[in-house]
Every structure is written in C-alpha cells, then in structure tokens.
Length: 403
Length: 88
Image (cartoon, rainbow over the protein chains, first blue to last red):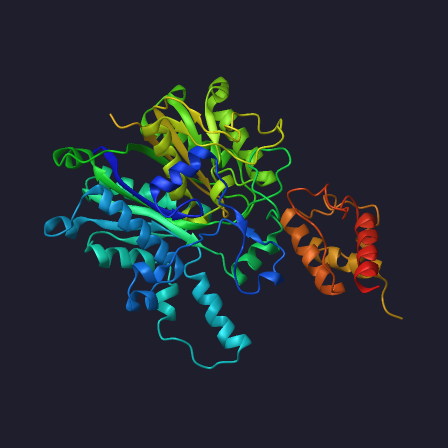
C-alpha cells in the first residue's frame, strides 16, 4: 500500500481567509465568533456565529462564476486555489486524468435555497434565476474545483452531516493509499449561515446564545460557523520525487455507525472509531499526543467524547491533549473536519497545539487536558481528528509528523 | 367552556408519549412517560404553537432555565406563568 502525505492546504473561515492567518489566530487563541450579519437577524433567537467577514467575492470571481457559485462553492474555490498553489502541482497531461476531488458537505447551497424560497413564497414571484439547481446541488463545489483545475479522476461529494469532510478525506486517503490515484484534492465546506439555516438549528434548542465553550462545565451549546478546508493528498514517492514540501502524513482512518439515535452521540460508536483509526494506522495509543476533538460545546457531545477517549486510551488519556477549535471558528458542519485538520497539521509540523478558548469551569465529566484558553508548545508525533455526526456516523483520521 | 391549560398540556404530552391523556398524571416525569430529549424538544414546540408563546429552554442546560421540566405539574405551572406573562 502507498504512503499518503499532505502537500497543500487551503482555507477560509471565521479566523482568516487563508492558512497562515488561521493558524496565527489559533496560536493566539483568537475568537472568530461574533454578531451575525444577515437579513432578518432581528427575528432570530440565536444571533452569534463564526461568520466570515471582509470577504469580497467580486474581487476573486468573474461575473459568470458569481452567478454560479453559492457561498459554499466560493469558500471551496478560495481554499482549493490556496491548497493547489502550495502543492506546486499542475494537472496537465496524464496526471489530470487520474486526480479526483472528494469533498464533504452537508446542506449544499442553503443560502441559494433560502433566497429563492423567499422570492417565491414571501415576495410571490413566479420566476426564479435559471441557475438555482446548479448552484445549490451538494456537488457543485467539487465540480467547480474539478473544472478550474482540470481534475478528471474519481470525484464526488460525501454528505454525513458533521462528519462529511472526515468521511471525504478518508475516501481520498483510501484512493491514494490503494493506488487508484497518485493525488486527490479533498476536504469540505459549509455555510448554513442564512436566515432559514439558523432558524432550523434554533429549533433543536442546542445552540448557545453567547459562546462555544467546549468541555467547560458552564458550556451551553454549539455555535455555527462557515468556511472551507481543502487539502492535496499525494502519494509519498510522487511527492518526494518532485521535492514537494510535506505538511504531514495521513496514516489511517476508521468509520463507524452508532445505529442508535438520530441526534444523541454514542460513547461506543465514538470509541470504536478512535480505536479503529489507531489500528488502521498501526500505532499504539501511547504514540498519540494530540486529538482534535469534535468538541461541539453541547452537554451531550463533550462528556460522551471525553468518556470515549478515556475508555480507549486508559491511563494515557491523562497524558494527551485534546482541544476543540470550534471554540474559535464555530462549527463548520460538513466542512468542520477539514478546517480542524489545520490544527492537527499545526501540532505536528509547528509543535503548537491550538487551545480550547472560552474555557471557564472544570467539568468532572470532561476531565481531559483540553489545552484551556492558551496554545501550548509540544512535540507531537501522532495526532487524531475526531468527527461524530448527527445520524450516528463517525469518522476519525490519524496523522503523523512528516518524516 | 374551553379546556384548561392543564388539559391542553396533558394532551400534547400524551400524544408525544403515545398514551391516553388519562394515563398522564400530574406527578409523572417525562422519563416515566418514555419521552426522550427529541420528544421533549418536539413537545415544547407543540406547546409554543398551541399557546402562541415562547418557551425559554436550552437542551444543554435543562436545569438552568426558569422553565422546570421535572414533572408534568411543573411544566403546566411553567406554561401557565408564561401564558400570563406573554398574553397578560
């Protein structure tokens, strides 16, 4: 089987419009969550989110692209351009026919749907723009990445709610690992930050009105974010032959299904995914120095995730660090695992572990070291990235420091 | 005569629990009735719609809000208070 390395990374999210800015914000423990700005915000009960500010799509996309790109596609393209530029790859000739795009996404173009339903139902219009379907479909973002870069290999979109991008990256890993393709573009994106999207989440009564405080005893719910994280996964020898910079190595993954409840997390399902990823990567639990937690800041997730990690790692659970960067960028849903993979890369490559900010009170049910409030320097050899979705679908990735 | 708030709340809870209203007593807890977290959220939505009120309830801190869900009688008392406050 082939070794798989990451040779490009790109992002846009509430912490920054590229990877260096995002990592700097994570190092400084900056909070990207603030007051939402959108139409009818005064009718919302939840008015905070990790919203991307200061992004001007007309500066980076032409007229035709703007007509076809929902926000989730715009975010994906910005991140993909950064990742592919960093990789230094070009896809002319035979390579392009083998490279594919596998991205995670949950809701598709929700803003497009929201705006057009409003026109139909509220304004009583009988005609909407002809591009509504190609804009909102879940695979629009992956398709536009393929078109812009000439990627003609296996390509599709994975939709498993909050685990979408981890499932997508696991698929991309598998394709490079198994020799299907020497390079895959992968990751994910999401934005539910439109009036109807936030209203839908409000209904579940799991959202916080003030802050995302994972693992803190006074946590009171999740906060939505938006954005994209895109990576170039490349076969190790292929990367080495062209002298590419290796950001980290992807060494394994596992996916499990709770088969239990549509919204409540399961300790067993999470634990099986974590231990499965370590088995797949052929590592001992003692090698893991950092876990990027799913850490949503809900009462249920954080205690269940802490219990799962404690079960899997035994005494070593007290030696490892497990932080949730959702406290800074919010929950990016189908793109969250991709944005959070950046924290794993930072831990492995730069030796800096991103903090869990907003941490105020210890919770005996979340007794692990969540790197409260301040980033920490540490030598991390192996990191895991957890994603546990509504619907009970879990995906955990394992990464190692570049050799 | 229109039904009392108590009867209307019991009907909503009974429907959620797939029971007859007569099986729901004032000292029943939601757990006794087999109503889980999603069932609770759905019941609160139905109550908000029925009485045209807004119920302050966050599933992450059920004990923090003023709205006490520990038994059917506490829920009824909470709704009576909210109806009074929000519809005077």
